[in-house]
Length: 114
Length: 115
Picture 1 (cartoon, one colour):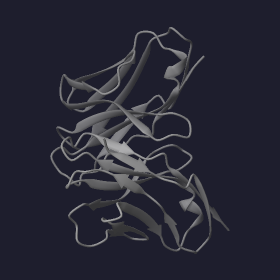
Picture 2 (cartoon, chains in turn cyan, orange; picture 1 turned 60 degrees about the horizontal axis):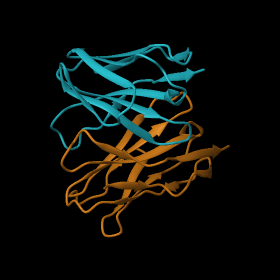
Picture 3 (cartoon, chains in turn red, cyan; picture 1 turned 135 degrees about the vertical axis):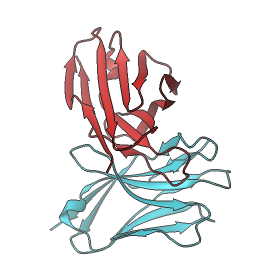
Picture 4 (cartoon, chains in turn green, blue; picture 1 turned 90 degrees about the vertical axis):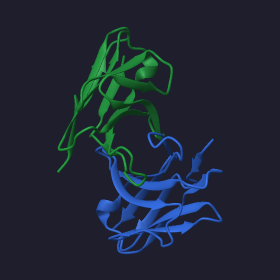
C-alpha cells in the first residue's frame, strides 16, 4: 500500500532563517506531488505541484520554492522565512490521469516563524 | 473561477444520530469531481468520498454518503450513526475540469459529536 511521510512534524524558526520541509512517498511510481498550506481555521491553499522529476508548477508567488530531485521526493524550501510563512504545511500525492483520484495527504508540518 | 462554500463553521450532533454537512459549489464546467475530507485535531487530511459530476447515483462509503443535487450545485455529506471519533473538521473540495492538479477547498465545518 502507498504511504506518505512528511517531516518534521513541528518546526519553530526565526524570521530570516532558511526552511526545508521534506516529503517522500512509498508504494507508488510517478505520482503527482503537491504542497499545500493551511492558515489557522482556513481551507487549503495550493502552493506547488509537480508532475515529474524537476517539473514544478508554482501557484502562489512568494518566497517559497519547491524541488523534486527524485520521483517520490518533494521538498519545500525558503531562503529567508517571513512571519507570514507560519502555518500548517501539507504534502500530498495523487495518481495522475484519473479523474476520480483523490489527494492523499501526509501528516503535515506545523511551522511557526518567530 | 470555481468556488466552494461551506456555510456551517461549526455543528453539534448527538452520538448515534445522523448529520448533514453542507457544501455548495460554483462552476460553469460540465465535468468536475467533488471530494470530502476529514481533518482530525492531529492535522492529517483523510479522504472520505468522491462524486463525479456525471455519476448517476449518489456516492456512498460505509457511514458516509453524498447527497448530490447537480441542479442546485450542492454536494452535502451525510454521516449516519455519528461516533465520537467523527469529531473533526470536514472539508469539501472540487477538482478543476481542465487541470486535474487543481483542487479548490472550502473553509470547512467543525463537527462536534456529543456523547
